[in-house]
Length: 204
Image 1 (cartoon, helix red, strand yellow):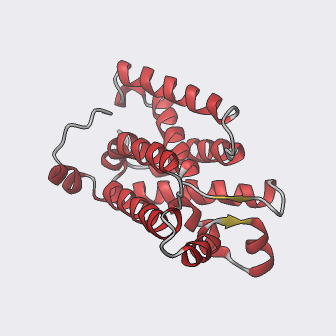
Image 2: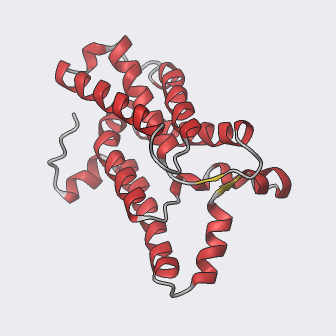
Image 3: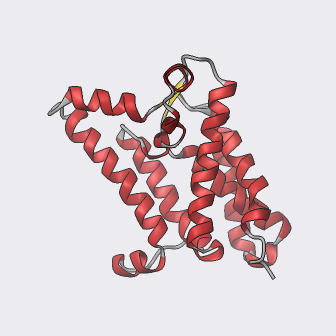
């Protein structure tokens, strides 16, 4: 389930939504790398970050409601984009097949947005955040739903992998620097709660 041995061409063909999500995240990161990190257009990078990052102050006081969505696709450090892109590459394809393209896309966006809404109401007005982690934890929440309620869909080895990854990911959320712990937890819980609706009519 989580071993990726497809060719690049077949990966794009079988998992188009995952491919698009990866491409958008990587493209935005490259724009920041070129304009910001390499300082070829630092003012542009600054304004783009201001536009896309999830700023509670901007959302509440300036009506920047798009910032409930855009932070999902924003990464500005190599380690951040590497970890999140790799996680999506590993865990996205199986869910895309099981849910179908539209429901999978809805799952990714919905859990990410819910995590960002939680940050808006549960964090301080000065809180700012970015990254796809809320949506990725949402995918993990969906996997936990399958393991608990439909374990026949996932073999024993993959069940163990899911439990270990979820446990490590949740624990590490509390110990890393500059981690949106609330976003991770709410993203995970939203995936768990939305899973029955997402799989409605698809599990027999």
